[in-house]
Length: 255
Image (cartoon, rainbow, N blue to C red; front, side):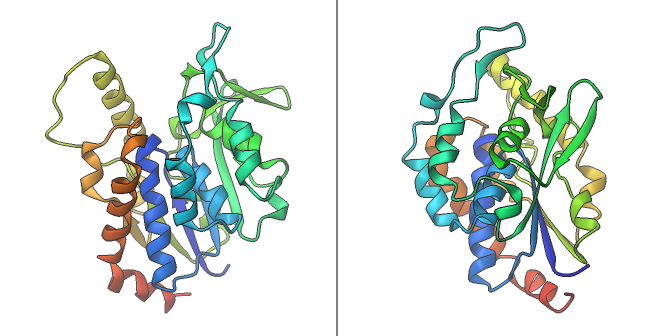
């Protein structure tokens, strides 16, 4: 085992904060040797493991109308299809398989039939990203080798397990703080709050196993669809991580 591993949680638009975290780590000269990710964390992790700079990914997000890449699902299992996102990833990701990536990456999704987490670390990259990002009911499940998968965050929103076996230092980046000033404005807000509390619960024992756990409190005021606030979400991740500079730089001595 060697090096620093970084686990990236899911969180919709809040996951853009991971880009700020990664940019701050780069600016501090802290090398990440392996990554694992769920949902939006899987997307960010795939770009970073491919060698695409965090600021470049931010520009891609800002210049992309994400809603153009989803369409109604004619099925009983979801309201939207995410397959068109494949075009977006195919355009901007320089690699198509895990084995080609310059950095080690593991992507977590949920096997619907078995009710277990599935860790993808080899084979085709883009289907694994789509599977990990497939929020149940909202999106049609992604089928890989005849197996249906949904969002990895359902069972494990901070996948540190693959890193614990390959890295001697683990950093967790989690973008779902619970806003204690929350007000029930409508059913949609309540649904997202319920989902947030459920997935947060499965991270509690995992965050305690991280050498450093990064969760910017200021992200609590954002919701998963706030892609129009990408720049400020990114900046929150960046500033908060720089504020943990001394603690993070000490990791270099632990390698």
